[in-house]
Structures are given as structure tokens and as C-alpha cells.
Image 1 (cartoon, rainbow, N blue to C red):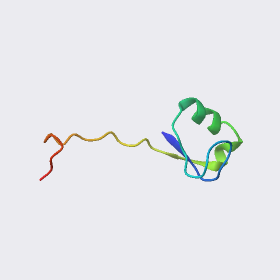
Image 2 (cartoon, rainbow, N blue to C red):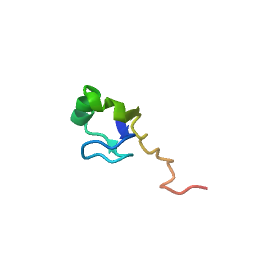
Image 3 (tube, rainbow, N blue to C red):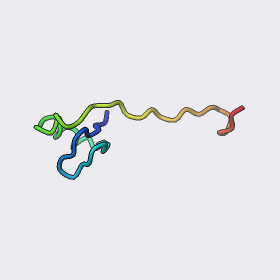
Image 4 (spheres, rainbow, N blue to C red):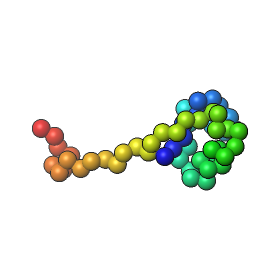
Length: 55
């Protein structure tokens, strides 16, 4: 999980992606929780098995 800011706060501008687990825990436990949304982590790339070539 990561957080994306919806309003600027601290050193984070709007749209910042927060991925540090310690920062996420601190934000979710504090008043700044109102300025972020939770989003899933980006999916891992899928290997097509063709060496990166697609048909």
C-alpha cells in the first residue's frame, strides 16, 4: 500500500506518492490522514516470456 496526497502538507505536494512504511504509519495515525488516500502498490511487471517482444 502507498499513500497519495490530496492536499499539500509538510514536505509533500499534492499528488506525492508516499511509500515509506514508517511515514505511512505515522500519517495514518495522525491528523494528516485527512490529506491522503490509500492506494494499492503498483503491480509487478509481468514477463511475457518473449524477451520483451510482442506480436
